[in-house]
Image (tube, rainbow, N blue to C red; front, side, top):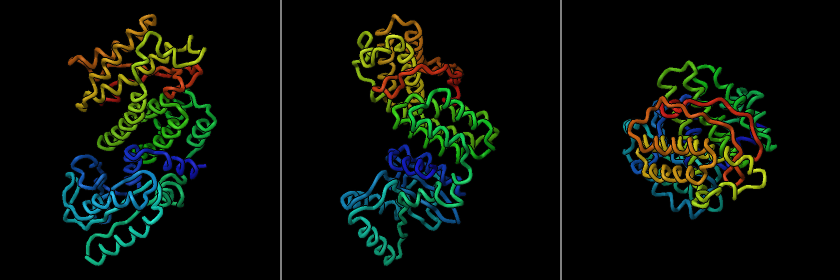
Length: 377
């Protein structure tokens, strides 16, 4: 079941959502100076790391790579192998180990093109590209006896995967699973914990439970600061969990269109049972998007005002529900206020999001609130 779960994760995970679990895998395997350099200044290097007195550089791609895609990425691969430009953790003086990481496989003529590309590099005495495909990643995560997840997986992880597969995951079951992390030995959260959370969040997203995926990522942040980790380790793990939350919260934001801003607009997207449940659905949307926008404000993102305006309009469209009005207005006003304190607490209640937004239609028990400061710390 573990191999099946990891394989499904690799099949469905988006490209950038794979960054954090892959970096956790590298740290668990003994790589140091692991850092993300993806962006305008990456120069072909999404992630850099060091091990065995060598400088490793990774370019990651999601899914299969065919002949056409190979032709499109050869420029990036040249930069990966040959350019000395990268972030501060990249040491150009060390021997170079360039790796193309793909969650799928090379297909069609791509394997022949890759072999020819490697031969040319070898003939020129240049760094030779390695390819880590789906099979390589699967063996490193769970397939080999010494794989990161092999032997470390307990009943709790398999149980939550089973409940997700059976469409039986609730806020209670996710919370019970996440509480295990509070007792993890120092150092395990940054490797096994991040990988567990990434796999479970991906499965929750596939099952239409974006709300639980967001909550699980936030629970990992809570466990990180509760755990007896060194400060530097805790910051890395909390950052990974925060980015995991942001990935799924932004997916929720992408589904929030203006039709929800009409009076009882959320109600119109759901079935008959939503007459009793839609206030909780609205409040949950407001909470997740409020947290997302607060993170975006700290990072200087451009869409903070757009989210704040949308939340304010959501509260106006649902004035008959006091709790919705309070939560959405609090989120919107906090985003617009320079006096916001990261020690503020916003409770993360359970809710019943509709299938349109990746929420369930059954009432879960109310989960303990998570301090907002943990997300922003």
